[in-house]
Image (tube, rainbow, N blue to C red):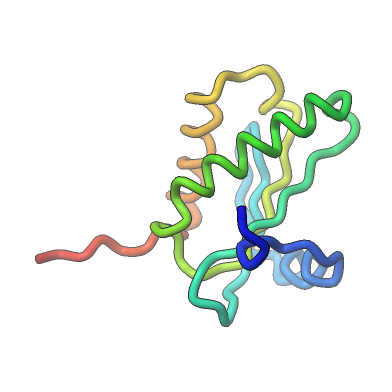
Length: 115
C-alpha cells in the first residue's frame, strides 16, 4: 500500500480513536474518521499477544491486501483496524468476509451509482 494510503503517526491514531466512531466483530475492531483527502487511509494494529512476528505480519498482509482490493470502493475516511484473537488461524476467504462485514455495517462503502 502506498504511503498516501497509510496512517502511521501515533497522533493520527489517537485522533481517529478519540472520535469514537467504531464497530467490532469477533475478528476486528474498526475506528473511522472523515478525512480531507480524496481517498481512504488505513492504519493497522496487531497486538503481540496474537503471536510471533511472522504471524502478526501475515495478519497485517491479509488486512492490507483486502483493503488494497477495495480502496476505490471505500469513502475517503481514515480507518484504523485492530486485529483480534478471532482472526488468528482463519483462512483468507473468512478474513475477507469479516472485513467486508464491518465495512458494510459502518457504511464506509461508496454508494453505488444508478444509471
